[in-house]
Length: 472
Image (cartoon, rainbow, N blue to C red; front, top):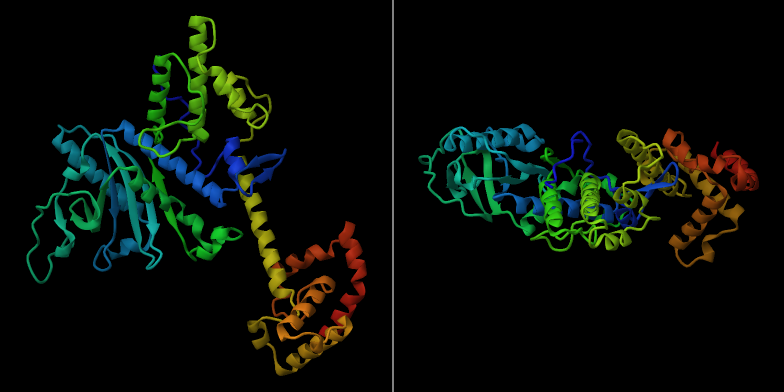
């Protein structure tokens, strides 16, 4: 029986959502939602690698299904009419490029418009911040053979002639070479490099899908923060009807049924892919439903389960991976399922709470010290500076800490700062931002009158009166 694409085409395709138990186990910082449901954090290196590897596997699978595939790197000029395109993600330029390609192919094929499958990764360069596009395109025709090509060294720009000579003739053959810049009539905005569709070229292009995750905000709290970009940004679009890689998966299900067996594992070996493909989200549902349907049809014909069915079930733990196990057996889940949008909103709320927790910790370290930072110190008058030094001296006497007890000044300030953090538990009274909402919120955890915090507050009540007296 021919496997067809399921009808639920409206199912949202989340770029970050990893619902399988194995992927969540890979996540180094999973998020726990209501009902003790755990989902991947989407920000740690393990989640980012899982997301990238999934798209690489899907692209390689799509390559096996299509007659032709090519990689295009599209750039913008640094000057001239096309220069503005490099300042923002203008996806319409890519849409117009695909439209020109479709029209060129249709012109040579009796007006029959081709079907393109594509993955478009827009990237803002790290050095100059200019936008360029990494495009994976699949088609029945060799798109390198369309349009006119010239070598980039002629410095020809679309729409006008160079001042020092005539427009160069477009006679070169477009040999795939990612290091050889070319000018192409189909892309009038800048130079182009092209390459064959291989696993290596796919990995290179798809890594830019994740670049928006490598900015400083999304990298905080991870090991990659020291290598993050201040304004890392990327733009990602892809074919969705059918999704990338789904056609290969449906054909693979047909091949299993023709052999009269099912796969012994949910890990798929895709020709041309190093390692295995572990489908997630929509692709995983297609795989699980397809394997269950194969087993049911074989059972109807033979009266017993398909070969390797028991092996497949043994690889899916019914306790830690109940959702997949029930789907393979066709067991309907009784619990009310949370909608995709509600799940997405809850994950975002949890991520925001985590960000604020990290931000509060940073504020307490910066503003809860016995010494104020440079900007705050430069913003106070000499009279206030004298009060500031008197406050430090009084605090040192109360703590029983003197400069002579330590070999270095750094050790002295460290000991005094530790005492202040343990007993003061608030922003430095001379901090210029101590009345800001974020600062008050960061230190409010020390003032909640419940549990152990209430005891700690009672113990430090006298110390708070001492602080307030000397801060006035």
